[in-house]
Length: 285
Image (cartoon, rainbow, N blue to C red; front, side):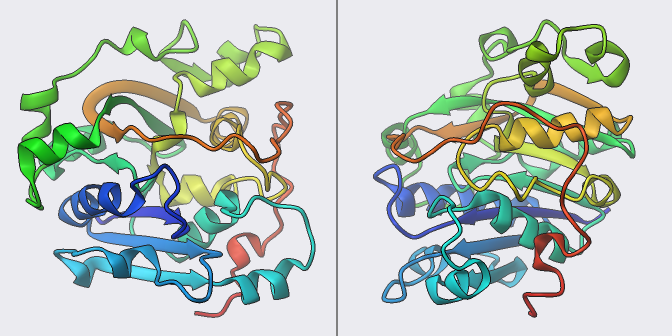
């Protein structure tokens, strides 16, 4: 079973230690997954893409897609969107992934080792999405323990452990489907669809499931709720979303910039993406 990880970023030092966090995160992906697609979105023309700033092992597994400011301007003109437009970048990667299973994740996440991931894959079915509860750790603690060692994801659970999932849940349920959510008021659907806080740090589904819902909603070009919305679409299309804290994923803490505009919390159960979602025909590779 071939598994692709899709992640995206902008080389703007978001969070204060983007390159240092990316070293541990992307190397863990290249160790675990069969293919890693990194979509660089809107990095200034005079800067390298993030992956060119990092010492990476297993680089032959890595595919980098660059969408520089000039191309963003050509594609979208003056349309309002955040400088790091995750929905577009993620969809570009998802449309070009060759894996049977696709994991959407972030460059501040250290992913599980493959032997743990395979346990999760055994339970994965069509029209189902898993979201994993993250555990926050500090970059300084990783650096103190591992230095510049690439091979860390096997050892992290031994050192940082696993926290109870109830530290992260936003819902009384660990499994959500259309039958359950339909019994609750519409204003509770966002938290019920999320299941956990930070639900977008590790979202795994078969490629066919991602394509059925046409990926992330491309109208949501601002911040927040995009990851919740993609899970809502799985649920309302008749699928299932599950959450667990095993295998553990580790999130490297960082500062946050909350100055940009936010998406509205209201969610449509059906996609408005057209057949060109992920710029399939517009952006030729």
